[in-house]
Image 1 (cartoon, rainbow, N blue to C red):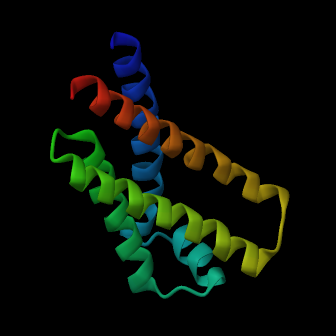
Image 2 (cartoon, one colour):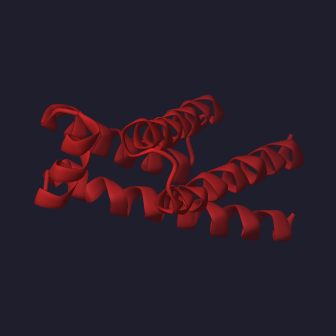
Length: 123
């Protein structure tokens, strides 16, 4: 159980930190986030919404709340990451830069796996 908890908190902490750090520029609508999202064809209000949603989702997986809410948070962040990859491929084509997205996707998957391992151990 201790190993499962340690791995869960490591993956979840890294995943949440990454999501929050990428959400802050979106939420504040800084020039780089605005330009990047604009190149993908998204309006400013959507950029701010995505930033807000990533922060709320990250908080939801970090605090002790209902497992159902955590499931929704994981699903929302998965949709965000998959949508980001899809948008980048549609606009920029397949490029080596998209491989960076493997990091947050991988951390999210590992966090989710260990979230369920913890649930099954407690139950």
